Length: 428
Image 1 (cartoon, rainbow, N blue to C red):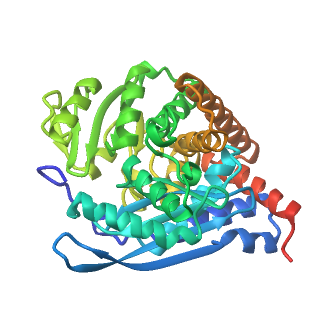
Image 2: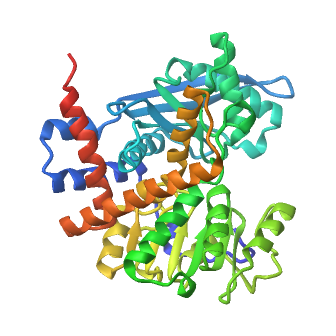
């Protein structure tokens, strides 16, 4: 956190269970769609939840047992797709929620995937590079029962990256006896990765933000933006929004945030972060503040790009932004959603706003299967078309049902999965 952390009631409240949140969101959409009770029962639960406890030899020769998960929510529309995260607070319920959100995210953008997610309970900052590799390879081997190009394709998520995916791809390939690049996405270019993949989620955030402003009649040059989280997604979003004329006034990372009401020089900030490993201390900032305080700044647009449950019953009424673009997964609890709706705050939901990553992951998977690769210009153009179309379909459906963008997105996604399930039937 920042030098002076502001304490708010939200900081002491018990965090919402993300799986309960995901199910409540689904229930709302199912009611709007008047979904058959049997279909509701099928789609409301995850299909598989796989827990592994596996030993890893540490650098000092000791053995440590890690716990990891791989959950598949739905496989009706195609292989499961979803990231793997490393974090001390990873839990089975979190992974189940994320797998369900992945199903809807893929369906919103009409990708031929179901939803999955994985995670390992650990603090990667406390592990050496060798320990991280050993843990990753052993985890990959443990979940190899589930993952593969035709069944379940992992990708990077919180605290995992291209190198993590390379280790997983190599582990699975060594066990198969031949290279299987389509096992994972988000890989380095040298082993079958895709142009445009590292910036894809942030680029998608930019596309839907521009589309939201266009439909709301806003001029980007008159919009101020605060971004919570300055990792891959937050930093790319900041860079691309700045390039489109938005005034980025505040950003934050795990250490805290910085604010300048007149706007931050984002290219200079990116250089500062690369040199110092944090946004704090940036010369162009006029004020340092906590992550919680950043959310309550008087800005036009707020982009949460960190973890779940950032907006709750405790702080939703104090949010001053007119538009929230959910670059993170599950940052808004249902109670906060209700308050935002009552106050006229427009929320672009996570299953739409951050779908750029899985969209370009789909492109990577297709390229690996064909062994034929596209140029970045083509990838970015395809991504933009898919994201713009998805936003327009969601917005139109929300207006038709007189509901929020979140419920518009859920209605679009749930109907697609329900229709596919009905057509396939229940086996046997």
